[in-house]
Amino acid sequence: MFKKVLILFILIILTNTCVATEQNIHKAKISEEFTFETHKVNNNTEDMGVAGFIYKRYLDKNWFWGGAGYAALFGQRGGYFIGGFLTGYTLETTDYIFEPLIYIGAGGGHSAPSGASSGGLIRWSIALGYKVTPDLSIKLHTGYIDFIGGDIKSWLAGFTIGITSYEIFSK
Amino acid sequence: MKYFLNKLDIKFLITLLLISSLLFAIPLSEFDYKSIEKQRRTETLVFEHCSPLKSTAFNLIGVQFDRFIDQNFYVGGVAYGAIDGGRSGYALGAFHIGYLQDLSDSLFIDIKTMIGGSGGGGVPTKGGLLFQPQIALGYRINPFTELRVGIGKYYSMDNDFEANIFNIGISISSFHLFIPLQLTP
Image (cartoon, rainbow over all chains, first blue to last red; front, side, top):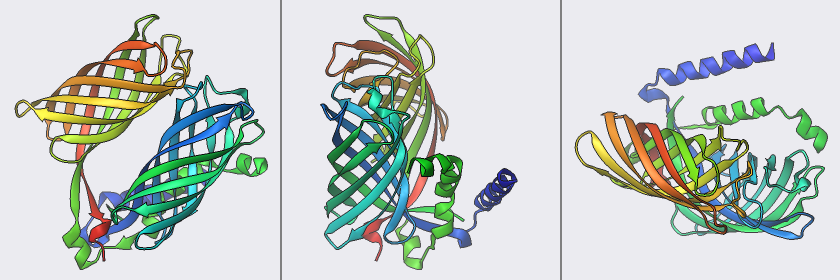
């Protein structure tokens, strides 16, 4: 029953999108970010560097949610990937940004240590950033990644470069 | 927390993400309409043949996303996964920067360099960092559909794994509309 309602709901929304008019053009604040961070794996004995892409969609001026994917670049774990959802809050002044976020996802891969367990993970971070321009920001972040039931439980640190804009679409 | 994750319906989360913009969007003001800019974006479905110098070949499929900074330069990302050759589990995710030059109304050359991470499936990529330059010849079927054939080289940066690559792709181009944040009062 739930599936049928969900399909109907999606169909209604798609129908609206297909018959766009000037009156139903809307905007939503989004942010697209490149990120790099390091954390430890294998019972905190190995350093690993991962890079990724983050997509955020703002629900209002401050609250956002979105998705992110990471791939291993440095260390011994080529083929280690992480993907998941995130939600957080952006507090900003003219020049500076403070941004806590929580990330729920899954990770692992062929070369991943057994500490990834079943793959489910929770990660939180706090970022401090500087707005180079109103659109472009650079942030430093620190946080903690925890593979549920696994041995990967590590502090992390990294940086993010992001571009924020208003995406336009039809409602 | 484990219980919470088990109960979490991923399909529901994805649906909510997709429709969140529709639920929380803001109507455009008069000023917004004057500030709208467009950016060319391309999505490409790619089939890639990878021939390592020291092991057997395998094939990948994936998607590539390009955003044009100006008429010629673009940046973007790719995500590929192995589909055969005994390399199941091998995946690649990378950022790239490229340059596209028209040779005629329908032909163009596309040069790009990828940097990213890859591994799995027993492919010896060590830490995962990769560097992949490539060049492609493209044919524009119509203003928004392109075919391209490319060759390149795959280098695993901290291991001696190298491969020749050959790929074909079909692209859909469109203009994405947006409002730069700095133009918003």
